[in-house]
Amino acid sequence: MKIDNDRNKKVNFKNKFPELFQFFGGYFPDAGFDNLTDENVVRNYVIDCNKSEVSKKTLEKAKEELSILIVKIDSYWEDVESETNRYFEGPQDALNWLNMVLGQLNK
Image (cartoon, rainbow, N blue to C red):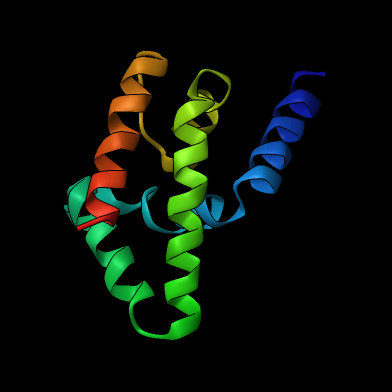
């Protein structure tokens, strides 16, 4: 049953935050192997998103989703932890990290 519950949570996160799901899963999990800081990872994402008009819209959508996620962090912090391959002690720790990400996205 736990596996089904975990799968349902992942699908729920993916459906509610599709751009963040792609960003988090595509950029963060292996960053440590490349010796990239989280700030570097976000900068790389922004650079990639600024390569086309379609990608710029994706970046704006990711920012919108991130603003919603920040408000709902108590429900989703473990999903963020899982998708980014990061450890958070709790929702406040995840919130601090998400605020850092948002700040980097807005630079």
